[in-house]
Image (tube, rainbow, N blue to C red; front, side):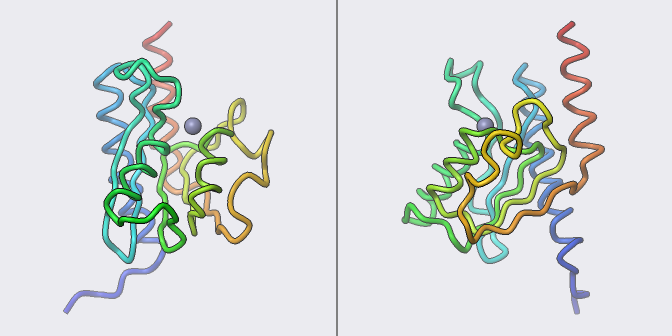
Length: 151
Ligand SMILES: [Zn+2]
């Protein structure tokens, strides 16, 4: 019999998948941010930042994941979904998460400069639950590594 997984363990397990996506972004020369969306313990979308590849400043991991999840589930609202993203969403993504009515957002590293909390702390859906700091060291390390190579 499977041991019951705590919410914390579950969050770490899904964040690892998001980290895998972030690593894929890194390999592609993209800012290494990855996201997955989970619905009733099923991964319905996984995506990573593709701004360079798609020549599109809106191609953030969260935006691509929202579109993919809505497509997979056949509905534009995602109240029963949890988004896992390696870095705190920006204002644009937080707005999109609000429009999509994402039920829960879990992020890893904080983003002091461009994170939504500084500019638009109320952008998410009012009912959305937020958990931060899941595997934050690993999420952050990937970003630091990326920008170190850029210099
Ligand atoms: Zn964003």
